[in-house]
Amino acid sequence: MANSDLDPQALAKTMAIEAAQDPSYVGDFVTSRDEDGVTDFRFVSLMPGYEGWQWSVTMFHDEELDTWTVDESTMVPTQQALLPPKWVPWKDRLEPSDLSVTDAIGTEPDDERLEPGVTKSEEQADEHEGDSTQDVEEAVEAFDLSRRRVLSELGRAQTAKRWYEGPHGPKSLSTKTADGHVCSTCGFFLQLQGDLNTMFGVCANRWSPDDGRVVSLDHGCGEHSQIEPPEPSRLWVQTKPALDDLHIDIIAQNPREERGDVELMERLAEDEVQEAAQADVDMQKSDEEAVAQDEANLNATAEAVVLGQAEQRESEQVEAQQQLDIVLQEAQDAADRAAAEAQQAVALAEQIEAQAHSDQPDEQPQKVASEQAQHDNLTDNGEQGNQEAEQAEPQIENNGEPAEQGSEQAAQDAEPTEQAEPAEQEDAEPTQTDAEQTVEPDAEHSIDDAVQNQQTAPTQDAESAETEPSQA
Image (cartoon, rainbow, N blue to C red):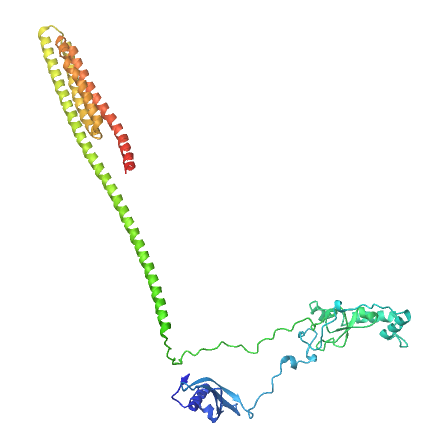
């Protein structure tokens, strides 16, 4: 924190009281020491159990701004303080007697007791062979055979058996816990001379329980030279640093040095960026307007095509309706003419019949009754033909041209009726039959034409419907 209004000594004491959390634990000012702009203020510690200690508050002095910033506050001991003995690492405090056969402390890579061994490439063969007398003397000196008595072969065998089966052989507990680290590969292993060097040696590791003892080559312990020391555990858990977000240090910044040429270049660069951005916006806007105009033109063209097709279909429907009305009117006129001719034929038949009765009074009543039945049948057939013609009119409305053809056919069928008058005058009965045959074909032709027109109309409508989309 920075503050230029207070006395630095008073500010330091305030921070010491804040660290002690009790004003009675902070005593009088002792001294201050300045070094590289950092001042260390000392105050007497009155906290119980810390006699001879002092409160230390370090503060930084900014001479340009004339402000003081608190760095840290803590308690430090003096020469009169009661301190614990100097801390000794656990590895240095450990004694060989503190280890058991199953303990393992490992060997440091830079242990002073070890040095690199001789590799095969460094071995040198003896190029010169001496005579037999010299070889014997060297063997006696090497194996110390100058003594009066030495071990015999039996004595060496018994010794080897006793050592191999003892606590320093391969069957010991330390060998089972050594995890394959045997003495033959250890740097602390010293070989013996003579015949026993092929099976035994001496351990030279002071941390091993076998130190100074004869061990077999396949013996093992937890202090092999290749075993790395375990990673030491932490004495305490280091907490994460706490951030002080309650106090804000306000630092005044120096005014910016203004340079006209630099500011001009910055403004020009900003203007170029803005112009490029505006050009991109204008180009994008023009593209959008062109796309919108194309869409509007396409929509207008489609609407015009659809409207023209609708008007064309409407005009075709009006024209078809007019043609249908004309055809219906012609059919109605033809039906009226046929009915009138039928009535004339009936009246003529009745007249001929009456004249025949007057000329032949002696004819049997049975013939009269037969003629009367034929007359009634002719009348019924005429009425039935009129009803069928009326039923055919809605079917004729579906298509004008076939109905017109039906009316022309009905008119042609009705014309022979006018030519039947000479025959009717000669004989009454044939004339009545001809009238019946004339009326019935007319009605049948009208009905057949209406049915044919009804079957043809859907096909023509479908063809017209297929033609319209192709024209569009």
